[in-house]
Image 1: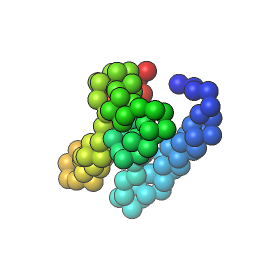
Image 2: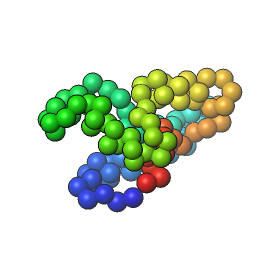
Image 3: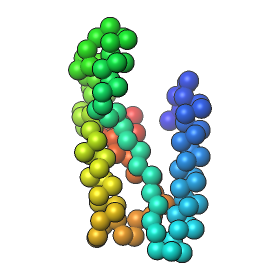
Length: 110
């Protein structure tokens, strides 16, 4: 989905996703997987500073995002770590390569 004012960041992410696919093709020759994780709104200390600049609290500021996210949740670093663990561990992630995985509680759907 196109967002005005997001042209540089968005195009940079597209390049990263495409580069990952190229790396995955090359790395597959060595039985190495390459994937990209695309996190959504992620809980971090940075939100406190952003909220203060906008004259509100972190919780109030994040609730604006949370209400628009389909699963109504803001993810945290554990959610991203669990995805990495799945991809790097035995089993499920073994044959997954060249993927861009969205860990965003459905944010990419809107």
